[in-house]
Length: 277
Ligand code: PXL
Image 1 (cartoon, rainbow, N blue to C red):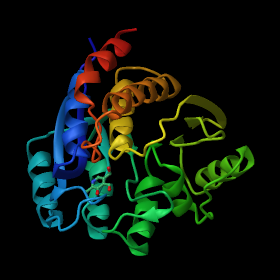
Image 2: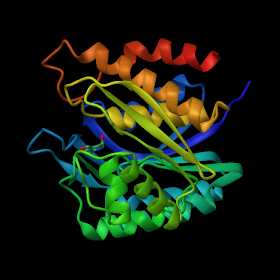
Image 3: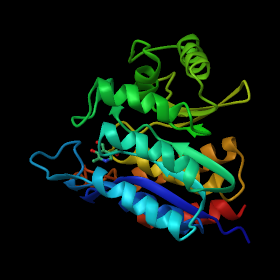
């Protein structure tokens, strides 16, 4: 039985079903031992709430990593998401070297933007630093906005396959290896994910649910990492993660009070069952 040790580095949004509160249960459900390194602690996520608290944990990170090194703790994979500061990115890059075990895989979700806009906590300096982390990873999982910011390409709401090909080719030219590009929609009623690996592109299209849902990028990336580390291919992992994320959105769609996240918990048995096949 595959049993991997994964470290995920992202914030704790205490309320709001995103980042670590989503990644830890999903990776555990996938059967992986999961260690966490919180990049920051917020009272809620920043997408829709106002007046949230934000404690940057950048200063704590070097000490945590040094202790782990002393204890000879190594990981089979590191998966990074929303980070707490520009300075922290350098520490995270170091981690990919000093905490890597054998057959190590690094996953970077450059969680910094959506719908053409940077998240409130970030600026262009952060984007520049994120490029150096993203382009050193084995697998990146940007949405279209993030891919545009990583490559300097103009963000468009409406585009065609030529635009997506140009985005992929710029990402690869900049150093990206495997790219999982999320939220690629060529028709109003559908969306999907592009898997670009070893120069080959594959597209998985699925149902698009009209209402925008917060936290789905984190659900998607966590499920992808969970599936990939269970030995699924990048494409199989992308499909499982997409189908699971759609279930999570379907679970939530009828509850207007639940605007801040998705009910990913009740779909975990479905995710686990998909991993068995
Ligand atoms: O879901 C991405 C995310 C993670 N963490 C925080 C966020 C967001 C998106 O806005 O604000 C704190």
